[in-house]
Image (cartoon, each protein chain N blue to C red):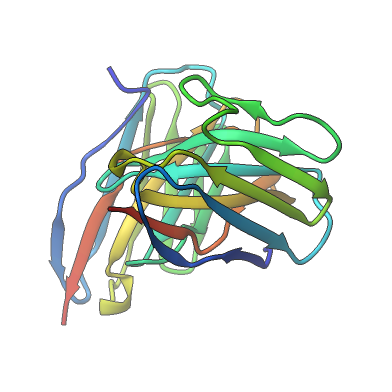
Length: 110
Length: 116
């Protein structure tokens, strides 16, 4: 069993829809949770960073962490074609050694 | 955030040769990290490089195959030695920077390696 599980998709949605992404994990010691966006042939870009459980909102993006269920989510509201990318969840026990999910490829159709 | 520059951005190499990837950061950082992203796979940490000490390698990665240098607080190199097609990957340099909620990891654009 992988330490971090993420559905690779692909996920295709119409413009304006809500994109819902999630990851599950097995290591209960994880306490730092991140979402990265990776455009084709580019490095990962940090989107959201959450420490411990709870919700965090930043513009059209909302990150949720449920440590009791070992489950994290990212929601993208009012999705745009420019949101088309691969989204990677990442988590760590300390704040630098990251364990990544496989990434979900998202396409937002105009 | 952080400005992280990697060179080369991409290269095609013959098997049996070596490739050295450079990583330059816009300001001093204590730790630099090297990740590998194989085609269709997630990112895997290769090693952590601290200035003035030997790099710390993760399970499955060895210094003979992935020697790392860290001569100062803004620069590091990763060499991928004795290349085989299985080494075809994206190699990513990353650094840790203080954020609002704690230290966060930022990545460079990556170096795309194809071994033929």
